[in-house]
Image (cartoon, rainbow, N blue to C red; front, side):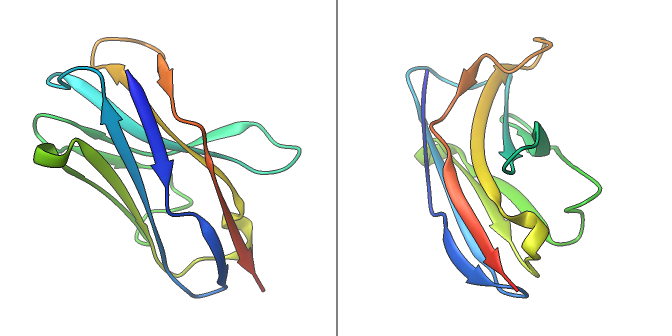
Length: 118
């Protein structure tokens, strides 16, 4: 499984940014794809995930109502639309994948930097 994240950049507080994660190497039926982030000096935190089959989603409380995760099955791509960005959203964002029944995410992308200026 290969995951290629893209779309990071610099944006002002209150702005929007979209991330993409291209997944390859297998079919993803019964898999879950997620986004995590790691700010400098902090642990990697869960942001959102989506089930590949049904498109069920879950979000961290800190991003609910501002971020939207979605997927395009035909393109094998997962997206993270980030609106109303805050400086505390600044982090390296990673996409990850795991079988639905697995406890941990087995596969990780390389990360993309998101910087929100105040």
